[in-house]
Image (cartoon, rainbow, N blue to C red):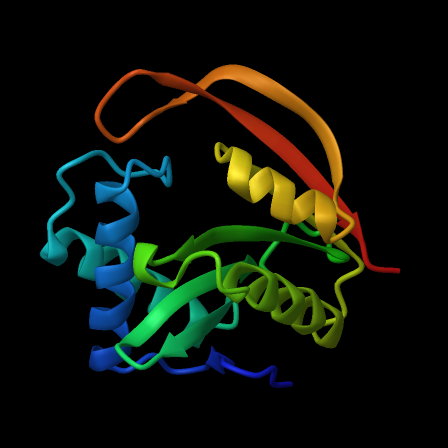
Length: 172
């Protein structure tokens, strides 16, 4: 499956891992609540992406990236490995777009590609959580259903609690 500008990585290369690490560091520097605290070093970010690459190699995750002229500009993951009573479901995770590439439709392209990849993998239900109001608008426009919000769910990268909103998407 392929969409303009979006590709699935089955075996992320060292260059891919470096590009993904740069996107992650940029998002954390931009105060995105994406599981990491500021400052996030490139070596720590690379180590995270290497763990993701290992899960991709085992078929536990699908990893999609979007490129621009400067390299990897965005990414999203599908956590395919779920408990045995949830084989129909995947978690959409780490939707990240570098600040240089925002407001250009990259998030929507990544989301559409992730939904199609989930269908291709036999998944009929997707779930996600986000701490970003901008991302909430994107998910709602794409037909995702808001389930609710948990106040004080996580920390912002420079400290302070933030709320997280949960969404689902029925692909059946």
